[in-house]
Amino acid sequence: MLNLYELTAEQLADLIVGWGEPRFRAKQVWKWLYDRRAADFAQMTDLPKSLRSRLETETQLGALTVAAEQSSGDGTVKRLYQLHDGQFIEAVLMPYDDDRRTACISTQAGCAMGCVFCATGQMGFARNLTPTEIFEQAVRFARDLEAEGERLSNVVLMGMGEPFHNYEASLAATRRLMSDLGIGARHITISTVGLVPQIRQFADEGLQVKLAVSLHAATDGERSSLLPVNKRWPIHDLLDACRYYVEKSGRRITFEWAAIHGENDTPEQALALGKLLKGLLCHVNIIPLNPTGGYALGPSGSDRIERFIGILEQYGIPATVRVRRGIDIDAGCGQLKANVLRRGSAAPVSDPPA
Ligand code: SAH
Ligand code: SF4
Image (cartoon, rainbow, N blue to C red; front, side, top):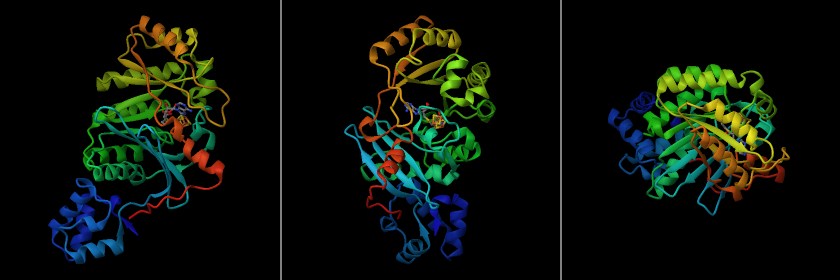
């Protein structure tokens, strides 16, 4: 069945005019999709009944099927979606104390980058998502929030997969987040493991979308052992591309650092990182490692993290520790899928696509 979220405004108009309806009806439907964020056709009360029932029989509001869902005490919602071909992807909604409502969405089923501590990396790569499959994950949370009288404010492309390994689709979805869902560029973040040519290409797009780079280590030996992609694009090349992005965009870049006890939380790594980033318009985001089945090490304690941040301060580099959201619900990248598969079945929930 035709997924309405696949259509541009013009394609929707062609469809509805083709059904013999006046053009303004298409505008009304578009408004229901993206301004009012309807979850079913029955809500579209200003449409004639005949149009509503034709929409209901010939189209659908989304093609993602919820396969499992978990909510955490802190309000985080983690969802496992099944795609039409049976693949699974994850999306997470994170409410913050201020009015932010952030959706974390996937760009690929699995990931080819093989970072050793990452649950998605441990699964390997299945396929790229289409722009609509990426975009729809945000729409679905926006719909749920709307029903609660709330608004989706931020989106991060930080779920399963490497956005720059699926560059065109990730950028197309990002543009739709801005144009159709009205999320400001400054409220969208793309996180990359460090694909150098695409970082440069992204800088050339001239968008105000934020960039986060998963650094995790400040020396090539250490980084290559955690992130195999470092053998292809070592730290020197990566930092050149990061400087290019900062120059082009005028924007601060975020470096992500999964703090792994006894591995990358040492004073040596902090010193190397301080030297590496000194003078660059940036910020370091430290996330204590989420333990995963395929990796033996654990998160750094707060004493080691404080020591690490103290050394960065000496180089004038701002660093903060990100609160671990939804730690009780497998809310690390790829972990819900990994755990559902381990249990052998997806917990059924009553939310088939409309
Ligand atoms: N592929 C992109 C975006 C998805 S991963 C990237 O790597 O940047 C999003 C972030 O989660 C990355 O910074 C990644 O390194 C981090 N991450 C993955 N597994 C983690 C884990 N087990 N604990 C903490 N952070 C993790
Ligand atoms: Fe892929 Fe990012 Fe996980 Fe690395 S951390 S395996 S790039 S999803």
